[in-house]
Structures are given as structure tokens and as C-alpha cells.
Length: 636
Image (cartoon, rainbow, N blue to C red):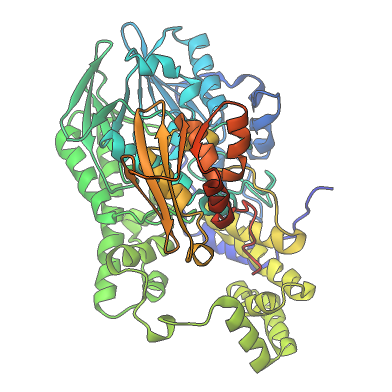
């Protein structure tokens, strides 16, 4: 039986009616530009996994069809509009020699046609989507080999589909370069490290934020804002870059076209770059300029970005190419055509990030805390009324708080937050002090009067003091649900609506994991040991002393490792007297290190070699933790 959310309340209907007055709903230009240049629909509307399972289905969002239909009372009208614009899947001509496949994944696949081959810029998040995109392009435009792949930055929805467009053997042989920002070591570190070392937590949080645990429905998930939806169970791949871009002004001539790069680190990603193709007068600022306000701090969890750098590199882009650009295409949403509109777009995005940065720090210097500042900062009308500055990915509220986090750290400056009790202890004390019935009554009063934000806060104490309190859970779910209906930001919507569903139904099984087997098996060795290290249960390992070497037979490297004082440290080079040496290619070494209890079976099968005391691995297994991808969020 499918999940059935409740009706929007009159208070929500009133809130969304008021929201309509804030938006430029009479501005319909994007409906034309989002569909400009469409060459072909996506045949069948489905992306399937190797076993035939549907991973992505355009038809699940068919309720968005029809430009003239008004947003229902369960969706903010601005979000409804954006969701319609990022819904229509297919192949689009950007300009001569540049096409994009859009809306069959959260990210676009951009294909540039060179004289004798194709240059693929970003690969979406899954092998299946990337392969389907390239097949659609070849069917309708040019059946040429891939000559190069370009990653614009280190996020999974830009490299995850790489094996769908290129064979690793061609990359290893030097026939197909993979161009990316930063050194190879730095790109690997940030792409794999960010998505794997904290990947279990990130995937769980992303499931909330991107609505992947919800059904596609006007009362559940309507879009991801910068893309239509995420895939279910996709194959996420990774191949390390081979051609690094580390300085602005570097160029590559590929199949008769010039690609000039602006290196923009510490912006939307730790490693990112803008690309200019002068022959086509075509520009991309990657995700530093979007049809959406971006995150300064992602809700899925990642390193906090530098809002000032967004503005700085967008301005440098204008200085370099602003007078010449005739099209700006991005890895999400649709292009901007015409020099005047491109300049206006980039200037407005630049000023938006600069405004958030400067106003957050102005208020910080006046003594505001992050939450206090977020409550009062809003974009001036000249910026905030522009659709491409609306909060379809980041929001003004959490971006302001993120500027504080970036510049001032975790403490908000209020002594009461410096050493508070943890949530369960706090909740238990609240209930003991004020009584369960009184707190429940206040929560019910808040729900009945449409004060949902307060209701969620009040009822949180009851749920965390007693997660089996069904009445409190149901009431808090009601509050979260209406907050989701009222949210303009799709990630806020996804978080609130998923919270409501899990309060009612219990924890839902994850649909996606960033720590894919391919990512783990391709980890640089130092990051692999870091990943093993975060599995060490510190107090259990505090009194052990385990030493072992790992010879990575495919890399020609040996590393020595030691677990002591509750931590695992590793360094390049063999130790003189290691009790055990594990010999294996990197993928199998990774498997043995992360599941040392299975190392004996791998050795018996002849896949790895164990030279010395195999009991060392038993000791390692005894101190390693396991990560549940379905840990609770709305309950303790």
C-alpha cells in the first residue's frame, strides 16, 4: 500500500497564496528557453539498470506536465514552476557543435562535437544515465568516438557516470584524456574522500534532502530544483583524471576546438573550473552560476564553501570573456543565450553571493548569531526577484548560517550553546520538568494554529524522550508535513516530508549510496587507509597494538600500518619486522582491510596472499565498526 500524505491545511493554503505575491509569476520567458533547441525526447522515458530494474522514470513526474496548471496547495508556486522547467527529458541543441542531454538524471551530460571525436563535459551521476545520454546523442547528431572527458568539479553527479561514456582501458592507454581541475591527487582526494569517508552519513542525509525516499507526487517529491530527480540504485563509477588544470589560462586543443580554463578552487566544490570555447563563443561556469541559488553549505553534508570566492571567480570570468560570450551552458538546468543576458545573469549571481557573504559578516560583527542573522537577511528585490537567484538548491537562510560557519566556526557565540546536553538528555529533562501532557498540548495548539515551526521544536522533546510515543510522533509528522508543503527550497521540502514519513512509518531503506564499490576500489592509498581508520572503534582499540604491511601488487607500493592508542596510522614503505604482510591488488586489498574477517576466504581462493600471522587481521576485525546506511534521524 502506497504512502498517503495528509491534506494541506488552510494555514498552508494561506501561506502559499501569500507566497505568490513575492514571485514574478508573470515572467514566463524561462518556459521558452528551457525547451529551446530540443532535438528529441528521451525514448521510453526510462533509465534501466543492467538487470532491467527501472532506475529513473520520466513518467513518474508526468503530473508536472502542462505549463498553465497552477501549483497545488501542497507545493510552493516558485518550486512548482522550477520543477516544470527541469522536468522535460531529452536531447537539446545548445549551439552548433554543443548538445546536452537533460533531465534523465539530476545532472546534464554535455557533448561537444570536435572534428573527429566528442568531448563529454560531465557525466551525470550514473553509468546508466551517461550511457543512455551518449546513445541518444549519437542517434540524432554524430556517431563519433569520445576523444576526451572533462570533469568540471569533484561532485558525484559530474563524474559518477564516466564508465558510461569511456572505457578505462582507453584512458589508461592515453587515448582518451580525462581533464579536471586541481592536481590528480587533489581531485581524487576531494571527489572520493568527500563522498566515501563520510559517505554513509552523506548518503543518508542526501536521501532526505533530495527526496529519494519519497514517491514522485504533488504531495511528496516534485523535483530536486537543479534537476528533476535522483536515480534509484544507480551504478556510480570513477576514473581518476589524467590531465590536471591547475592554473587559470591553461588551454587544451581537442579535435580542432580550443578549451580555455579558469581555475576556481574553493567555490561550489573544493576543485572546480570554468571553461571557455572561443571558436563557439561558449562558456560554462560549472556550478558557480546556475538557475538557482547554490549552497554555501550543503544539507547533505560537505565542506563549507567560500561565498566570496563564488563572487570573485564569477567577476574574473566576466573580465576574461564577458564581452564575447554568446551562450552559457551549465551542468544543471538550461542555457542562457545572448551576450547581454549572459552578463546580466553572471553579474546578478555574483552580486547575490557577495551580498550574502557581506551581510552575514556585517551582522556577525554587530553581535548577531547565525540563526538571528538568517532570520533578517533577505536579498534586495533587484536580486531576489530574479528566478535564477531563488533558493532551489541553497536557500538564503541556510547560506547565511553557512557564511558564519565558514568564517567563524561551529560555535555561534552564545555561551548556552557551548556545552549543551545532547538531544536525548535535553528532551528527557524537558519532559520531566514540564510534563508530557503539557508539552503535547502545546504542540497540538501550535499545529492547530498553523505555527508548525514551533510545533516541530516542542514535539521534538517528546519524541526524543520517548520515541515510542505514537501520539507525539504523529503530531510532529503533521507539523513537518505542512512545513514541507510550504517550503520553496526542494531540499527543505524533501527533509521535512521525509521526516514526516519516517515518523509515521519508521526508517525507510536507502535508495542510493555515494560510497560505491568502484569509488572505494579506486581510492588513493592514503585515502583508503583514512577510510579504514574511520571504522576503528576508538575505545575498543585503545589497548591493542596491531602492526601489518600491505603490498599493493598492482601499484608497486608497500605501506605499513599500525593500530595503537585507538587510531590507525599508515605510511608509505615496508616496516622491518611486520608480523603480517597482505599482498593484493588495490581493489582486493581494500576489501580485505574493510572486511578483514573475509581475508582468509580471499587467501584460500588465491586472490590475496597472507605472509605471516593471519591472526593480526582477526584483531583488526575485532576493532572495526560497521555503518548502517539506514540509521535513524527523526528519532534517537
